[in-house]
Image 1 (cartoon, rainbow, N blue to C red):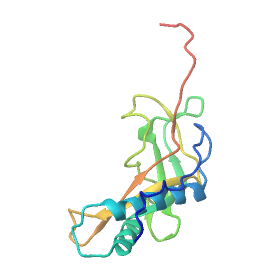
Image 2 (image 1 turned 90 degrees about the vertical axis):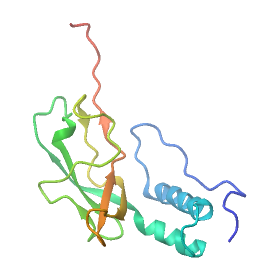
Image 3 (image 1 turned 30 degrees about the vertical axis):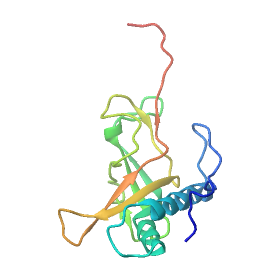
Length: 163
């Protein structure tokens, strides 16, 4: 297998804050990460590099926001993070879903704030998320899927000098 570090990987162009990330760009970035991982990760098995890369690719998935479930009162379209939940679906495996319709789940990673320290604008429906499937330590043989949102934004307001 050629050394993926011999030449820089083909990565997508950077995007500006608030600009949509294209699926093609995201997939190229993931392919580069998988290639680097397969070549450089410490070996804990006797699997050949291509098989190890496929195993990682099966764990790291592109998903989409299928539904945004909002509770609470918005202020200028922004909600508290605790009231901003999602239904996620794996793009290539629609049977992999997180969150029930109308109920949703809180994302595991990617929130731009901690707790309810600030309101956020939810990530829109049909936008890209990252899903990571890992063995579930609490359920032998089970798999747990973690979600990472990529498009939530902190709601900011101009300070008017009030106290």
